[in-house]
Length: 299
Ligand code: PMV
Image 1 (cartoon, rainbow, N blue to C red):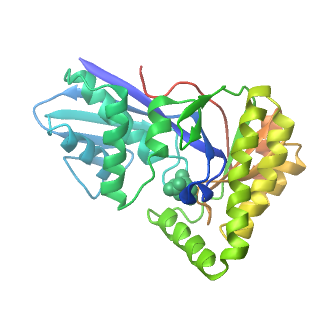
Image 2 (cartoon, rainbow, N blue to C red):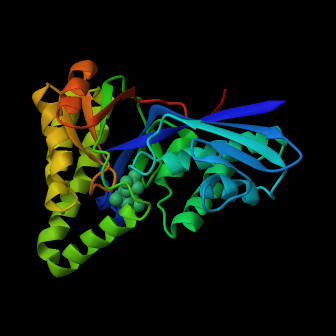
């Protein structure tokens, strides 16, 4: 028998960076998935686009750690993914959660989703040194989620286009940018603290707008949120080029998603193909996707 699970990636509608200082944020699972198949075997093997290995903490750190976390059963694991690696879309959380879930079922280990999310977070912390629980939580449970309360908001049925700058994707990028904002805040607390507070206020207002499915207003506030992320110094010329291209093509709004410093932006739109072509013309790789209520699920 083979057991296959998939788990989604995520974007931030509002609130990245401010969430580090206790402000609320809204993170959303998107229909870009990592699929992991697990089969009982007579040796541990892991195959992905990165190659075929045994338990290997260099090539496959997340999957190897997930196998180890579940007491290293002899399992053959195969991975395929729609989520670009290391660009703020939660690829590492998705592969970790899907691996834990597939092995859990294949070997009848009996863990529930809360436990899978917790183990996933511990693995991300171990591999990366530090990690917020948001990615593994959203990948496990899906939906539109208020952070830190973890309340599920209504699912949105508006188009999303992600624009990848294909730049700056390094494993330590998030930690570096979080540090950079901390340094700026230490130097100018009276200027930076209000910006962080304002970013927090988007999530509060955003919750109402999500309930009303008011995409035009959500988009407008995403664009304001982008300006403040730029003010915090986490923007890049490439990210701004994609953000402006998406807005010029009629998107409701567009912003950086995740840590910034390269990586991805996200646009909310009811004409995803038009916005995707504009992002491509501006030098990005466009991915058209949608919100999803489905977290980790058996395929
Ligand atoms: O780029 P990502 O997906 O790792 O998101 C980082 C979000 C931050 O708020 C910048 C950091 C965090 O841990 O919340």
